[in-house]
Length: 200
Image 1 (cartoon, rainbow, N blue to C red):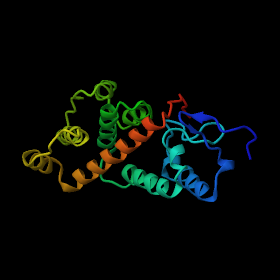
Image 2 (cartoon, rainbow, N blue to C red; image 1 turned 45 degrees about the horizontal axis):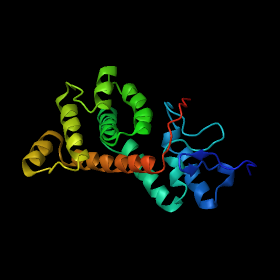
Image 3 (cartoon, one colour; image 1 turned 90 degrees about the vertical axis):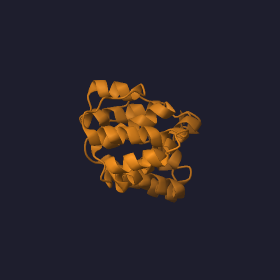
Image 4 (cartoon, one colour; image 1 turned 135 degrees about the horizontal axis):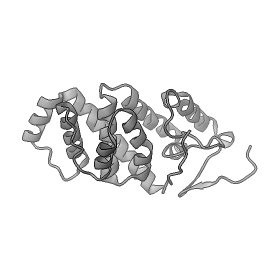
């Protein structure tokens, strides 16, 4: 057991892996041993003490719900038909709408790794049209902007255009992505989770 009190991460203490309950430890192991821990690591999942960075620490405070939430996130990242470019473009749209520093910190490197240019990433950060030349990618960006805007009516004309360009499956996946990353952005804001410049 750690002898020092938990270090605060915004409004929540950072939970050390040695101090977790069995349910918390199960969730911790699922996250650190799951697909997020494989492949290239563009931001550190944990700090040097093994404590979570970003939204995952908060999930430990309600481990049953946290397991389902992180499972949804893993499904969105690894089990949809969205290309990495479309997925990361969509995440950065949500980050811009919610002004989420952590989502930008975590996903701008992933967007660059997926092939987005620096200019495209900067435009997304500013909430501007990134000028994607691929018609499908541009349609996905446009649809995500509408989905992330609570004031957009998503009327029948919009839906017909989006369905023709993307199909129902992609619209379902994009709307799920928007909901998930908006949830994380809300929790990151609620708990004042700081961005720690921690790259592997």
